[in-house]
Length: 374
Ligand SMILES: [Mg+2]
Image (cartoon, rainbow, N blue to C red; front, side):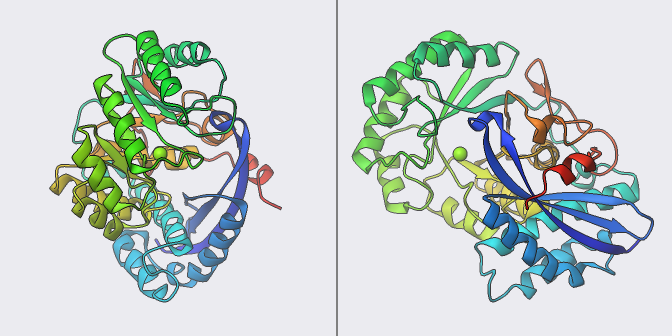
């Protein structure tokens, strides 16, 4: 059944896990000749990037209309070939390919009456542990520790905390405060829970600072340290690797499997962040996750936007052997809770299996219409 239309829908929404700030994504709606619909998402985050992705999606549309969603790989290759000049491994073209690709996987599953998880080969594990992904925002460390422990008390297996974010937490700047934070959060969560630290764009550590903090975090049992030197510092990461034994995470800002291959080859990344809304869709994520698996690295879905990327991340994390956990925002806003009928969630700390054909979700189109960017 052939595709008859490709629509780009730039939207914005308030994100409770990020200080209720507005963030933007570009949704993609692909319809076939029988009226079935597949949905995708480009994790653009900024309104100007959402609008730019929408323009490219509209430019890609003639390459998708009239094609069968069964031929996802061929369409994906055609989009890559078409964007040879402006999509040379980075940028908005990868966002646009991501949104279209996710929508095609959803539509293919709906046409065949099969879940995306089964199209990907089925689950490789019975149970997928969930962790909370949140930002530190409060001035009081004790209050933040209590809040985080409240989330992990629901069964979540740990918490990844963003430092250097909006609000009054002031984390990632002062060593004594950072270590106090780690001590109080780990004590509040209790044994058996993992704490991951994720440096934000407001934090600018030099290599010596990164090594000092990494050693102190490692001694306290921090499970991984994410983007302590940003996304592009191979020499710095090599020095950090030589100077501490902590597990190092980065990769979520890579655009495709080639970029993931490049950072894995440095030998400095243990946990590779991958966003299906950025890394060229479900197709691109799977290629990147396979590289991680071949090199015994952990792949980790950067699941921090709407319930569409949530559903794609859920299917991929069950299907890819390199994925070991799934991050969930512990407090859902409209983009996760109200956008779809069955948002990914957990039961006693384990991610629910997707159900139903495609991504297993039905979209609230009234909400999409109300969230459209002007
Ligand atoms: Mg991160």
